[in-house]
Image (cartoon, rainbow, N blue to C red):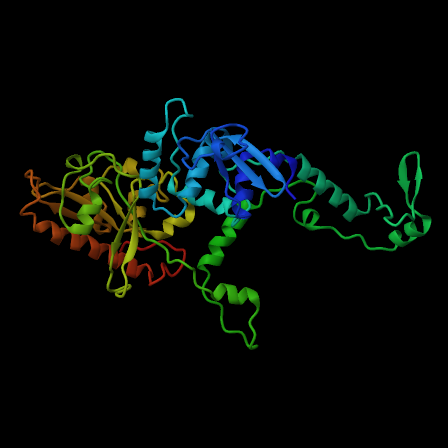
Length: 426
């Protein structure tokens, strides 16, 4: 049963509605009583009403929630809109957020906040009940949990009060129920047991989310267990032998430098179609994450692999580095300050590096000094048109050959890397 704090919390109400398959009602008034007070358009709604069993609660749609992006609380409208678009790709989701912000009437509560790829995945997992905690969600008041844990600890240590008889065996003295002497003898002979609060948490609530994240990493990449001697394997071994439902998507890191010839606005067309177009000649309002499909014959000739292209590691988590298969660079070392290996020589001993420059110009001294860990390729200078750029395809195939070779040496197979180690760049 949900606590009173959860009943008064908009984020908890939304999670309860999702897990109980109860669709929230968008309203145009704080007290919706009829069909005329509701709407199907989230841009026109001013409130969200939750009707779950006998519980009825209405919240302002612009109310801040416990889910935060950095130090900024995300509004209820933004959270609900992210849930409605849970199955949309990041590009479609960003476009939908832009359209909704344009549709919002003046004074309707400001713009909808755009969640990053990692934040959206984390939020959806929590709302759907797949995870119980989230690093981005501030906890509710823990007084109730702490009291429950303290009571459980007292019972386990034998210091807690004795339960009162439910069948009338006890007497009432001074307004308090007293226990029959015979029951006291029975309770004295019992062995006091603790519950999961006392076993796992002691006398105060403890957040185990960081340990669960570490455990998931090992369970996800653990090698297949050997075949047991007995015909019926234990559940743990069976779970370890199961393959992930989705194969991991390789990650390509781009340079965030404004001097880079390949940026988020033109990299997909270059690596996909084999034609180079300068970044300033394309739409500069590009997304912060792109997807690209490419068949790698030596890894999986039957189906293309889906690559993720990003130019920032701001939302990177430690397991993501095992999926990085290429790093584009301009030779500027400040790019690597937030990377797993800030030293370029060490970085490109683990990951293939790629530098793209102009035909007829020498690569930067840094790139030359980093040796064969960085592939340096050159494209013809832009003449104002994409026609006649047949050499671009040859450059693109060279780049993909470098990436495929690094993935093969790093143990990549049909379903992802062989283990959580780094992909070798040599």
